[in-house]
Length: 150
Image: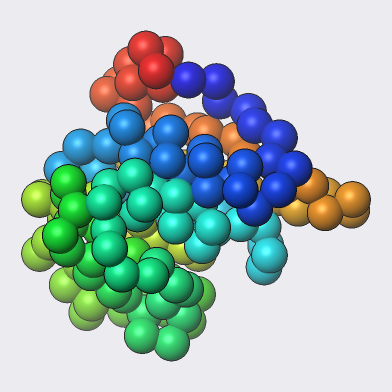
């Protein structure tokens, strides 16, 4: 799977999420990084759709974390924007569900990487012309191999 993507529409962002979902396994951690409006939730919506999540995937900003069951794998969708420290993340007890789930964390950079031995970092951005970009950055040999094979 290529590591750099130009996402002209929201549908393109969701499609990238759907493509990523094909690579996901139980225990995977995906950290989404980028400014407001860069497409973090849209990407997660694509992941959820491809995993077979039936309910709407919406931003978990105010609830901090949602668990979506009923698909191929449970999807834990978290938003670390209002969390100030690793201790706050520990208080959420996300690692209790990470072994059997896919965990996607918006705004989690520097806070959640300890939840898994390896993770995929997705750096999203929005250009001045409103086109989004995504850079897939693997952390660990498993993610390197999956991206190279996908």
